[in-house]
Amino acid sequence: MKLLVVEDEALLRHHLQTRLTESGHVVEAVANADEALYQTEQFNHDLAMIDLGLPGMGGLELIRQLRARGKTFPIPILILTARGNWQDKVEGLAAGADDYVVKPFQFEELEARLNALLRRSSGFTQSTIVAGGLVLDINRKQAVLDDKPLPLTAYEYRILEYLMRHHQQVVAKDRLMEQLYPDDEERDPNVIEVLVGRLRRKLEGESGFKPIDTVRGLGYLFTERCR
Ligand code: CA
Image (cartoon, rainbow, N blue to C red; front, side):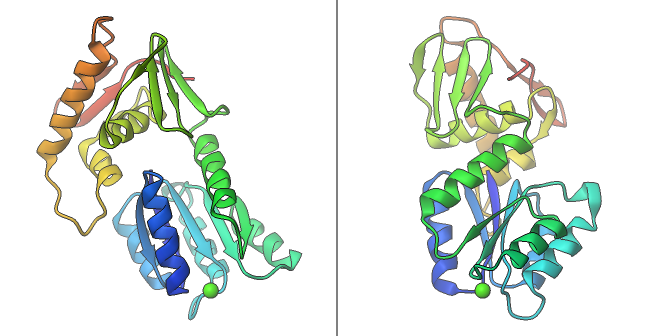
């Protein structure tokens, strides 16, 4: 998933970027609200993690401005707050955040909350996504097809998870590219075609499972219903 981290403490920002990238996410990490507003106007993220105590515009005001965009900013927001007092959390939730983590936190707790938010925002209540004989374990980042492990590379897995989270919707190639590369790296749309091609071959295997359609000029469609 593509995550936005807004945190002014350089060390924590770097730590979050590193750990979340290791967990298989694409992470944009910025130090203030202005950069965050710019990022959210330019790119599509799946979740934003926002520190409340930011220099300049604070995290609460940032959340209010993002939520004021309404349907164009529907993604979950997780607050990071150093302050233990309950008023901050209440204000943050009232401003439109979905959950919070109090600093200092264990990375595992942050990750668990993040995964729960991502799961709920795509309408899944379990930590697995199932389509026929295909089961994705989104915590372990593993796939099983017809009760056999399906070996996927990290990039193939990300594409499959994203398509399944957005099942029965056309997903543009650009959106898939955002799942693979941070914005400042060079992107090559052919890479997506190659990866989707490999993914299709693996899924088709001996069982003939063909859940990914190409929608010419638009992108890809995972045709099976997922639950
Ligand atoms: Ca701070």
